[in-house]
Image (tube, rainbow, N blue to C red; front, side):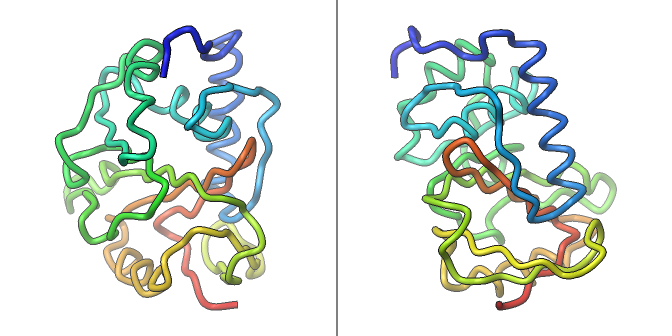
Length: 190
């Protein structure tokens, strides 16, 4: 990826707007939001790029999977990102395929908030197997149907949820939209 591809046009305002959307989705699991900005940075989808520019900097570590590896120079230039050695040490992971959640840093008993956040770039936020979300931030259960999750996702998520307050948070990005699955949410089939 070349550095000529711009980041945010107005970095402060756009990062603040994106951060507010991340907070909204983390407090309302499964709610899909669409960004008003379009950060054109293939192989990163616009939502993936915007979330990364908002959440990562020189003080946190990031791990990218191979399909997104061409983004390192761009992220280093625009965000000063620090490269994590592996998925077990990364504060943030950005992937096109969900790694085993048990291999991702889930925080510690003394500092559960240090659990990693996975930014998963998926083909679409609808049209996949139906998942029912329950728990904090949801007055009633809601159904989402993202594409690109592994067949054993619900089982992995149950293990992740059992670690609460430790655990991993997940942001699902597709195109210019994203939604969140915080570690506190429970997930069932359909």
